[in-house]
Every structure is written in structure tokens, then in C-alpha cells.
Length: 325
Image (cartoon, rainbow, N blue to C red; front, side, top):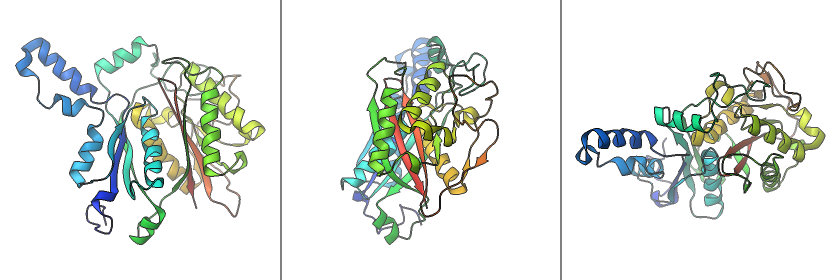
């Protein structure tokens, strides 16, 4: 049964909240080229609807006739996770019963590659190597990840298959630099601590951490420091890995796609590997699950839990707590 077919949830109580880091950059590139080579008449009348940051949320609402809260979230590489967290809050405060949420990005185009290259943010080796001593930047990817979030009673009433719960969410800002994280990871640490508090759990209750892990020198160091700040000695006992080593950096879609992957990691009790981690950085000494996926043990009597970290240009820090019984 789909939400479109299920009349037990009124359309007015279903929202659409979807994040993107940049929006329709390919549309901008194509139509700028048309403007330069052929003149104003060649520019598509759909340019603005396609490039605006709220287009994905609006398109989903239009396609499925969703009449609840509908908007886009733009917080760079944290946008997908921020959208999910915002959807959680939207349900918690009673503005919706169900929210279609996640993130989407399509930036594998020449303009985006040139822009990120000019920032020295992308890898010149073409290898995504999070936490490796040789890391030299991220490798761009693209994609989308979408979740359907529901209030527990609504999901139960309509017989939905519940894959996971999101008991905790937090977001903070570094207010340090437009593109560089706070070197000691203070803002990220505050987000992690706040997400744990929101979920009502402590460091001992986390079994796996999906790291933001971009393969940049600054991010991987700051994120490691943040995890150590919050978890202390417990940090060394938790598997921490970066999916960006295998799928690249999906920018605004990263947090959403990684949330989906983390849910399935919890369901299977398997920590995905950090690929290409072959030369350890002496400063970064956590268990990054190098090379090969590995099972993790969940104490009896409680659900499996993970953190999913997402950080973005602008100093955005977002942490989701995910839970699977």
C-alpha cells in the first residue's frame, strides 16, 4: 500500500521536506550556455522551476497530492540530514502525521567540478580515502535518498512496515569559516552531544557511527576530535566508517542516502567498510573499519543504535540518532 492509495492518512497531514546542497545547477549551466550562444529566446521557461532549491519537495508533493508542510532545506552537504531532522520535528510538533523527506543532488557537471576544484576540495588522485594519511579531497557523486517518516501510532494504524526509528536529532553551527570546519570539532561535538541528549541515551548506547568522512584533511581530523570529545575512551570501541569511500560525496543528498544505508547496517548488524584506508594517519586512531565490512555486537535487551553525522560548508553540523529493534 502506498501513501497515495492510503486514504487513512489525509493529504493535509502529509508533508514533503527535501534537502539539496545547490539545487538545479545543471539547469543553470545548460541555460547559461544557451543564453551566451543563442540569446535570451533560447532560455527555457522551466529554468527557474528546475533550478530552485525547493523544486524536489514541490515536485513530490505535486506528484502525490501532498497538502501538508512542503519546503526545501538548503544547508550544503548537511541538507539531506537536516531535512530528515526537520521532518522529525514537524511530526513531533503536530504539524503533520507523515513526511516524505530526504535529499537529492545532481552535480556531476563541468561547472560543479570546476567550482569545487577551485576550492581545492576535491581529490586530484581520484581516490576517496577517508581517514587515510594520503587523503587529498572528496570525490563527487550524485543521487537521492528518501524516507517516509510517520508518527508511531499512524504507522501502526495503517499497518506500515517500520524499518527504523529516529529518536534523536540535533543541529549546530560552527560560526568559524565558510568552508572549513572548526579545527577542534567543537560544533560537531555539540551536535553529537545534543542528539544523544535528544534521544535520551549516552555514549555507551551507540553501536556504530556513520561518519561524514569526506576524505579531506580538515574534516576527517575535526570529526575524529569531535567523536573523542563526546565519547571519551568509549570512542575507541565503536566502529566508525565512511560510506563516501565507496559512493563518493553526494553533497546535499549525502546525509539522506547515508541515513538509509545506516538503517540497513543496523538491521544487519554489520558496519560498512571504509575503503581505500591503507595508510593510517597517526592523528586519527579510531576504529574506521578499514577495507572490509564487519559485524558489530549489540547488547541484549536494547535496540541497535547508530549516529549518522553530516557536516556542510557554512559550518552546518547535523547528527541523527537511528534505532532498529
